[in-house]
Image (cartoon, rainbow, N blue to C red; front, side, top):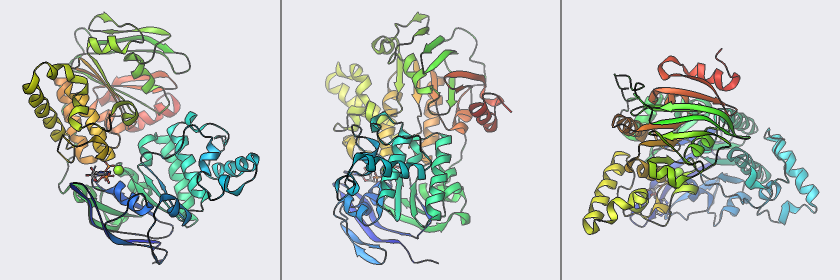
Length: 502
Ligand SMILES: Nc1ncnc2c1ncn2[C@@H]1O[C@H](COP(=O)(O)OP(=O)(O)OP(=O)(O)O)[C@@H](O)[C@H]1O
Ligand SMILES: [Mg+2]
């Protein structure tokens, strides 16, 4: 067994009213992929922020390559060869890819004199990561989330990092890109670099992980177990403290597809994004849209919602033709969209959970004065309880919630609002396994109450398990439509890759 690269002993970190880390231990060996698991709010991001010098621990020791260290600032940690790729990427959109890679190096631009040299060095790193197509001179803001992540990794490599910590990297990637990321991880670990990998997708842990450490409520409940020695079921019960059955809610027994559709989309097109998209959704029905990220699924949802204006085609809600490109009209007619990039698009970070959740529903409570405020709190807290938002106190400021709990707050907002048509873009992204099954049940209950639901998800098993009908989108076109029960995961993968089932 090799000497640990990193040891963290008895780490304690308190925030006002929360003991986020309560005596946590972690050890990482050179060249391994060490998975850090735990439910939303368990303390994963806090632990790696302590490690990186972004938070100062209240107690505990950090031993890096045999020496006690404390990093006052993330740049310190980077200088010692410890890089972190955060859940919220810390790159600068307005700068070029190359400038982002060498951002914060001791000499500006990593000691390179000319822009040409900087760009060349950046290009070499990007090529090493298997992404020569990302041009160093490009503005970072124009890259996809996957491209930004690769840039962040190139930055880590530019500092000659011995340990790269990745906080939910796959949350913004599709299957193909995750495959690519794993290839990169395998390559750098074979060179002796260690990776700490955080994810809520447990199948990834099996694929990439060597060992796992599990946190629960800020404590280490399992430290450094070999992945080969634990089952996924055991990991889940360590994380949640209970056994979770992975069952999807029952589908309605009577066909819902009879009668008039609630939402009808006909011949919807937007140049360069998607073309000739048509589908119907009936009350009580969940329609799943799947395909690769970038296939146009989110763009389709946003166009249906009026956030983008179609070049051609129509959207009809309950017999009423929607004004193209008008969110106001869509919302008024009873449409709701829970967007993919929840933090950027949806949350008022400085406001409380209650206010954030009831944002879309304010009218309902505002007219009722004090009684309204009480009703508002009760309704919100019931939903946040169902979704297991932690801490459960609705008066908490959203900024202080963990990533996954923030997402649950946005989801709760749209579940609270009485919509006729609910559009959900990647609803379970970043949400832990424990809360997922609750979420599936809530969505099914909404459908059962007569709502028409359209859900976009890259997680194929989720689409097949939850939706009634599935559309597979490839390069902006619908290449397949069928009842979910008639498709297997392998069929869908063939469809998204090849455009037809094998
Ligand atoms: N700046 C802060 N102020 C107050 N509380 C905080 C702050 N940052 C985190 N917390 C709290 O610390 C706890 C751990 O949060 P953390 O972000 O580490 O969870 P996590 O395991 O990364 O969860 P997720 O899977 O949702 O990302 C949570 O209860 C969270 O609300
Ligand atoms: Mg986190």
